Amino acid sequence: MFLIVYLIFCLVIAAIATSRGRTGIGWFFIAILISPLISIIILLVLPEAGVPAAHRVTQNSDPQKRCLYCKELINAEAIKCRFCGSDLTSDENGISVTPPSGGPRISPPRHGD
Ligand SMILES: [Zn+2]
Image 1: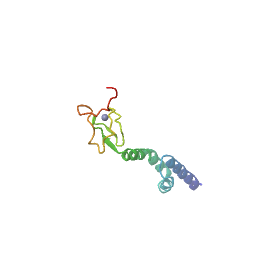
Image 2: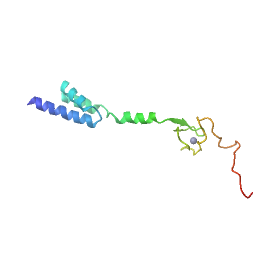
Image 3: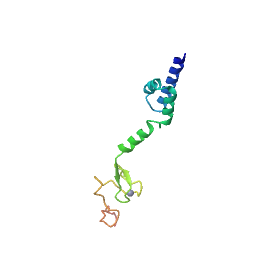
Image 4: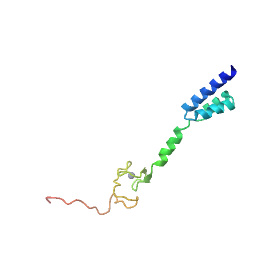
């Protein structure tokens, strides 16, 4: 009888572990080896797995570059700075960008002038 209750507790821990983004079968065996009471405490003390890790991955997979005008970090593929609104379409490697002011500007020819 005690063994059945013990195994039910282990299954409950496995279910909790799965819902918290951990391996259910692994926690089932942990609960069998060390008592279910201790393993459920460890499970509740441990932070939820999956969410912070996934968050880190998305941050790293996003290539970023620094805006030449306002020096804010923006997406490497951005064509317009989201902080200062500068046009970044002409830059290839983040170096050759037309200056925002002062430099010679090629204006389109006017008609009827
Ligand atoms: Zn900017």
